[in-house]
Image (cartoon, rainbow, N blue to C red; front, side, top):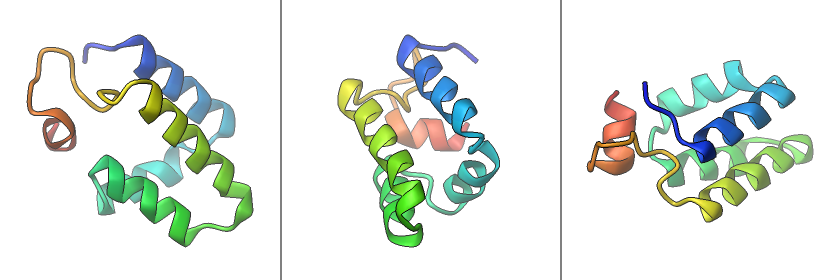
Length: 81
């Protein structure tokens, strides 16, 4: 799948936190970026609040972070893929 610098940076931070298995489960339940971030904030205790902040920073830096390059459907297309 094509990659963007913002997606690579986010993936690197997720790898550093060893959070992929957890995030993979949460995104399966709440695939939209907004619902995903809200689910993390509501369900998790302070240690994971940092992860929420990281995701929001990445989303603020590049609102299309969950867009597959060349796919104009945005987050919906990302979730479907």
